[in-house]
Length: 88
Image (tube, rainbow, N blue to C red; front, side):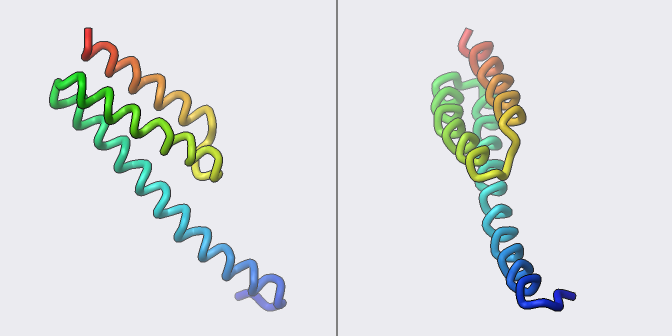
């Protein structure tokens, strides 16, 4: 348990940040799921649109510190390759 006023404040801040980060991660996963579903449906136009919508959300996750830069780069690269293969 936090004893000093500073540690109590940090505990409160950590709780708030945890909720915000959890919501942000959930939102990112939703966008990724939409891309996956679009790829599975086999419709290239829907997949491209879903990927375009997901990219800024993933980038926002990096700037907010929820995801690592290289993780997002890898995910976007792999999704883009799959969408491109679908269109071909």
